Image (tube, helix red, strand yellow):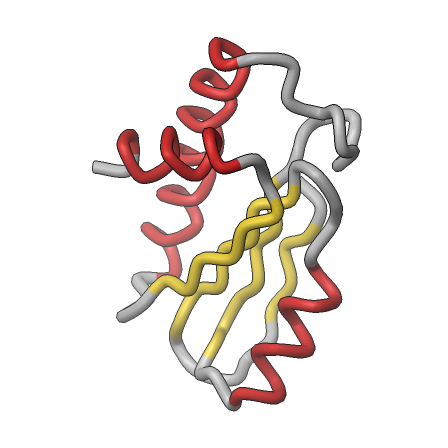
Length: 103
């Protein structure tokens, strides 16, 4: 995890996936600039941090997505947000796995 920050701008959750780089500052700027009603900004990454080569393959990506989903669900379960805003700094395959495994 790169960031777990209370923004207190409303009730929504902003979930940022930062695998290729850390998008936290850009996401925070977008949230405040767009006036999004976000209570919490959560940025998830790899244990070693975001790098252009942080995703070694599809098996790793599928496993990481399952762990990220559970972390996000845990935060959302406590926050009970009406909406989740998703921001991705990751390979397209990770986005595909995330969408497929989100249910």
